[in-house]
Length: 124
Image (tube, rainbow, N blue to C red):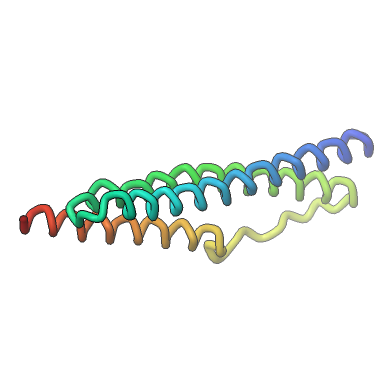
């Protein structure tokens, strides 16, 4: 590929990465706020069995967005390396990263809420 095409590919992948990164944060924030709002509207403990699935579903959607963001980053990095003439492949990630840890936390919070709600529902 010529240099102009690689620069254009880098810019497109950079914009794509930024788009999916923003969507990731929007989905995480929306699912957490929706969980708190539903909890405030329905303060019955048994309702937590259903409310707890909101952050779990939000984490699933955000995980898919995170995968798209990471693939855009890999393509962006490849375009940059091609511009520099470097053919060395970078090492893969060894740790999940902060964005993935947020998703793990959201799933855990959701499952705890589902567990509390289920126990309250069974005990009633």
